[in-house]
Image 1 (cartoon, rainbow, N blue to C red):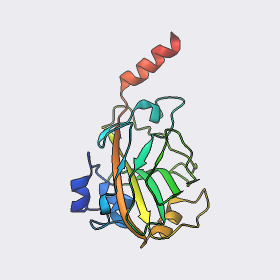
Image 2 (cartoon, rainbow, N blue to C red):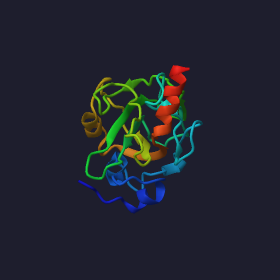
Image 3 (cartoon, one colour):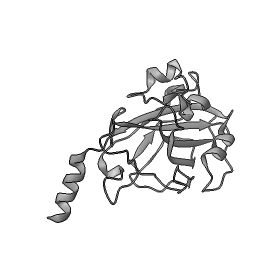
Image 4 (cartoon, rainbow, N blue to C red):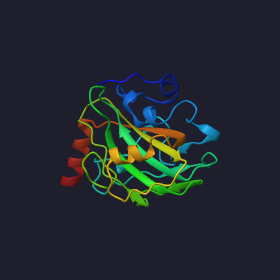
Length: 199
């Protein structure tokens, strides 16, 4: 079921998807927490609202998660969590691509392809970066990287699911930020890949 998109989220998100109101940041954080104390999430690989390189998607065989960087979280932060979702379809829950927690409560980064301290199960029930793989010739999907600052350390073990993580986070988010990357597959992508294989 489609959820209304909060005004603060609609103003902040680039290329808002139809189901943006169902993103976890909409229910776990609010206008007060968003960008608190200048908290921000960026990537050296793509700008906010920019296109993801195929090397981070299912288009390439050796694809990995993109690099991410964040500045100092709000005072009182005990742990950082990153959740990546694609809320392309308003009539379906967002597809969970990445659940990461156990990140130190300080300025930091994840390098391209780096394995985070704790990773939970994505929509395919694998504890890894779920490679974006939208249908060919579909409109660009928006992959929303959400970072949350929590006021307590989590005790969840690696491999926990999204529901478990959300329960542990609820009521403890004191800061949040997000970064959106878009991606679409086209017929020419497949043709070029085929041409390279047969050459």
